[in-house]
Image (cartoon, rainbow, N blue to C red; front, top):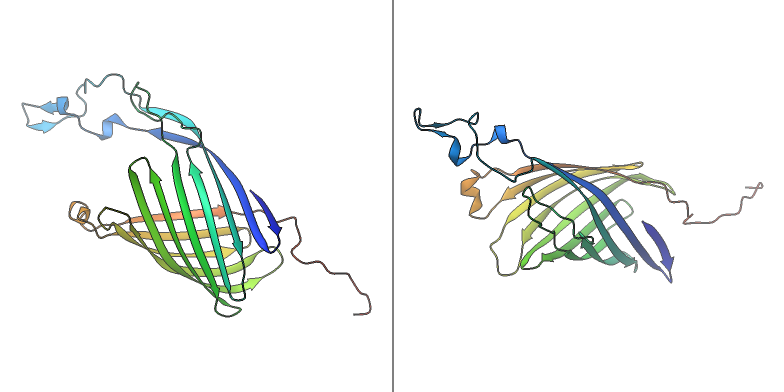
Length: 229
């Protein structure tokens, strides 16, 4: 990522290369042809007669994005735009060609510095791929424990709502985490509100994220040493 401050505006641009590995274990699943008519049960030791199916594949994926923000007193608005799957990688367990379409995402955020220790962060993001879209909005409260010229140590918690245009309300997401030195660790729990909750027995999904951040080599403040003081 590259960061630059111009006329009070904080500009950010970055790329995210990655390698995706997906696999499927046939012995953990049952196929229609594996029905044992003698026992009336599925037997995954029987031949599944599935042909042209790869049990594992790997591909390179590339994402890129841009963001800008500026602080006005206690308020700091920010905007961003992101492109996912820029290289349109091939993804399929079958022998046929299936390319991932480019996904676009637009985000708007507003940070309100309530006092030197507490920050309210509101945000919304709308993303779409061909005819599929989703909309996630939320609010985080961040409490600053300590800070220096390189990092801010803090804890945060909040709630998000996932919805979209011309679609059913999807889920609520509870989040919590901590920024410490070079690391950010976050936890989230996805609570299903749509009709899908009947199929999943109202169970949600638990996720963990770990982010490493390098030190910024550009000083945000300049000072001339004075031996007298």
